[in-house]
Length: 413
Image (cartoon, rainbow, N blue to C red; front, side):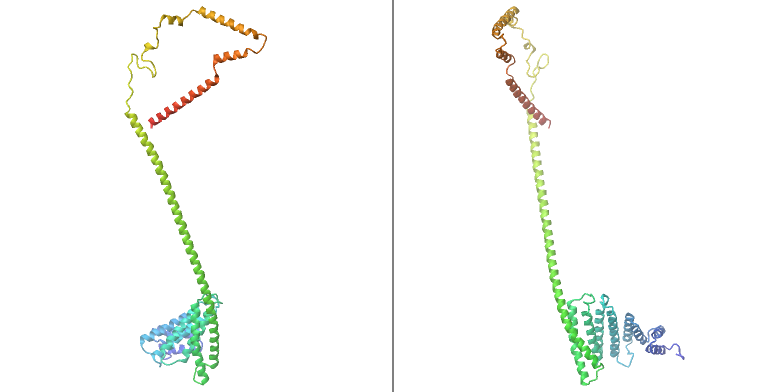
């Protein structure tokens, strides 16, 4: 750098040394400067920036740098180290897997509902480890161990969801149990190799602890799986009951609506029938009135009788000569106008007779009352019979009046 300040390779090496000494901030500035000068032609700067971001627990930025490094190395077609291209990619994939693993472990430190994303990040870690195992041409014990360890941590994360109030399913517990059962034989094989003295990069104590923990988690996972299946079965029973109840409610509502529609239709039908009957009665009355009016119109009008001084009133005589009849016989005339002296004599005679009849009761007895009553009856008649006759005549009159009124109303209509 003293000879050539634009030497990007030297600057990248200086940043690497500073990062190894723990001066991450200075190393980060140098790597960013190398990126600006070289235009990302030195892909090692991307990989080194990824390591710095991972050390600073900035996992998204670290993952971005690792992905950019893989993209640049694939496009160039040349490995950046003495290793083959596939071995180099397998190494970078392991870096990415470790970034996801460390991110998941950091998320689990919340130990509450915020730790929910940890499960997904463990699965991403397992995915990239499996990709690295496929890229590697030889059997890598470290990669296999990391895969088993990640399976163990992922299963433990699923089992801890109950304590963290995070929802889980029986399928998740089943997948965790399968991962544990798949990892246990591999770990036991590594432990056996270690006991046989074969070269294994992992210590015997670490392998023994992981095997024991895996066995414990398998037993715990089986118990959790049983509980989750029971919960899901109860939930399914409850959902079926609620579904049946909802269907029954829907059917009852539909039936009630159908009955209400039928009732309304019946009421409309009855109303229409009543209206039709009323219209039939009205039409019948109108037809009857029309027929009556036609019959009245067809009857001939009464002819008027001719008189000398106009028509005679109804029920009267034909001429005026009949009103005053003067052609009476002489005997009849004499009978009408008799001598008044004879009448006076007769009246006196009658009065004397009556006086003689009344003499025996002159001493104050009540014997004259019957005679008096009879006289009054002869003079005024029987009041009861007269009243009955009056009532009958009045009733007849009212009946005739009612008939005349009805006839006049019909003619008016």
